Image 1: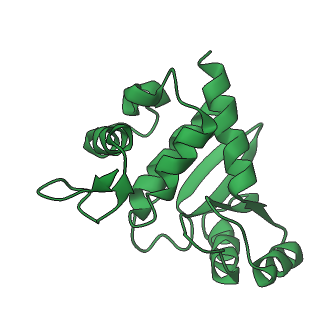
Image 2 (image 1 turned 90 degrees about the horizontal axis):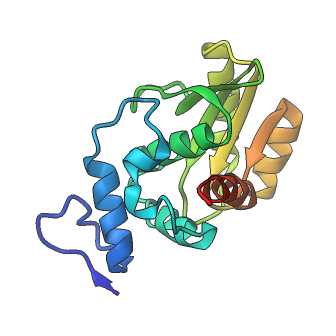
Amino acid sequence: YGYIRGSNPLERVLLLNEAEIEFITNFKQKDKPDSAPVDTVFPSYSNSSTVHDLLNVVDNMTTDGELFEKFCCLILEANDFSKVKTTKYSGDYGVDILAEKEGITYAIQCKCYSDKVGNKAVQEAYSGKSFYNCMVAAVLTNNYFTNAAVETAKANNVLLWDRDKLSELIDKYTKSKD
């Protein structure tokens, strides 16, 4: 383990091992269409990754929200979501990903945080759902939610997909590669 330094685009002083550095570097350098298969974006992790491996990589994306959004798109695609696409990175009305599954449209706010996610993300997803004319609002994170976020989500029928749900999504992806 060591610090990343130099001209690497990941020069955010993250503590990573060599495999994680390779994964993130390859991921950032891919110029992928919105519907690229997961394998084409992170080939070094496609066949042998465990949920734990990928969660460790995700936890190191906390300084790069756009990268986390792309990762979430790929994981959602691997979990039978269709029409998965990111919204514009800035001015997205509180929604990072639009997706569909079984005829239901989703407006998804992605939060890669080192701390619990608060109710602001829930409020953003809720308002973005209306803006994008989606049926369901959701917040997807690598962490967990504050009590206030849980209360706000219940009151507004917003799905909260926490670290456990992200693990399930990653697990389905990794098992599909066996």
